[in-house]
Amino acid sequence: MLALGFTDHPLRAPVLAELHARPFVSVSTPARILHVAFLVDRDAARADRSAFAAFCAARGHAGPAADAKHHRVTFGGAVLRWESHAEFTTYTWELPAEDLMEGGLPFQPSSASFAATLSQMPQPGPLLVAADLHLVTDTADALPLDRLFDRASLARSDVEDGFAEIATDFQPDPSGFVRILVRDRGMTDDAAGALVQRVLEIETYRTLALLGLPEAQRLAPKVAHIEARLGALTEEMKNTEGLAANNKLLDELTTLAAELEADAAASLFRFGASRAYEEIVGLRLRTIAERPVSGFPTWAQFLARRMQPAMRTCQAIEQRQANLSLKLTSAANLLRTRVDVELEQQNRDLLRSMNERTRMQLRLQQTVEGLSVAAISYYVISLLHYVLEGLHHKAQTMGLDYDVGVATALGVPLVVLSIWAVVRRIRKGHFDEA
Image (cartoon, rainbow, N blue to C red; front, side, top):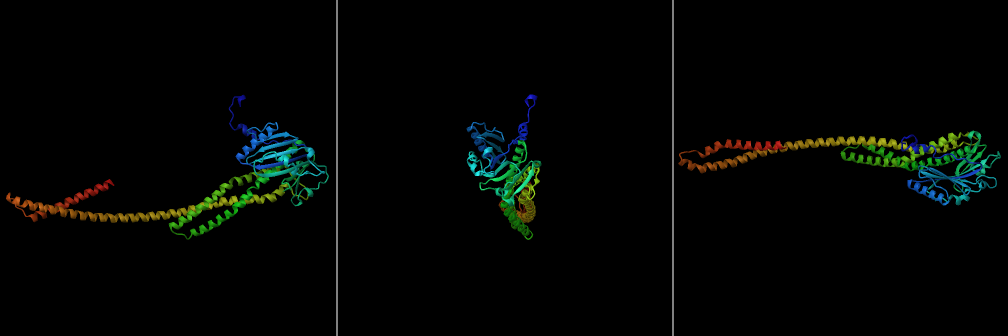
């Protein structure tokens, strides 16, 4: 904040702007609004922003700012509102009042007749939401709702303290649009704009919330398979013995855990987004403060009856994944402990075998040393005997006479002790070096 001489937090501007990211726009009755939402990833969202900016520039209008999340432009009597969200982009067309009704019936002409208008923008991603909302003045005349909606699915509510009524069957018409009728009983333009936006948000977010159901249905057989296989493996664990068999079971448990975690990671965003979208739908329904119309369910009642089973399915799969992860981890830890114990037993047996082998080698070494002392002593004594014999004649001439056999016998203990001492010293030197 330069005026005060302070340095702003780098996120201050976007945090403040978030409260005004998608403001309500005044809508005058009557009005016909076509609303579409496309799923986009990050690259598609950038391409869509560029395409919309080019679309505006080609018609002499400024495009959205680089960081803008919404933009509104008027041309040819129609108003186009563009909004960028986390995983989808919406385009909302407010059509001229004179093109709203034919024959006094809402939704006439058919939304298909506006295809040329809607197709002016390149499609940024797969279409998920298409709503045809008709805001009409309530003249207290009975409208033929049975001709506009499926009576079996029709939900009606009085809202805005009785100043409006909303009705829809949540089913696509032949053109693929879900029809929503809003009857104005005296709302201001601002109130009408806020109600229209909330109603469109309910339709958008309830569709997005249900994206988690196909994911849950896809994962259900896999989760059931892992549960069954985990039960079989834990049953095998009770009777399995031996390191090889336990290692095989551990490998299977690890494979199951990896498969489960991969699926859980892939579905983490989808299930989390479904919960968030469901909460937004509930918040919008509470905000419009529905009052029941006799003989018809409110929107909240209809969506609760139809959406809640789907949301419970998503939650159940997510909970089963979490429980399975804990059980697989527990089983793997138990089996890993068993494998570690068996490895320790094998190591103990191996050490015992090595000790026995070392003891045998020591005995053999001592035997070899004894034989070596005897053999070396034999050769040394033999050499001594030859020396004494060779010197015997010379000693006699010098007056020194000795018995060769006796002299050799006297040298035997000296030679043996000397060689034994040398061998012992050599062995002790080897032990010291080790």
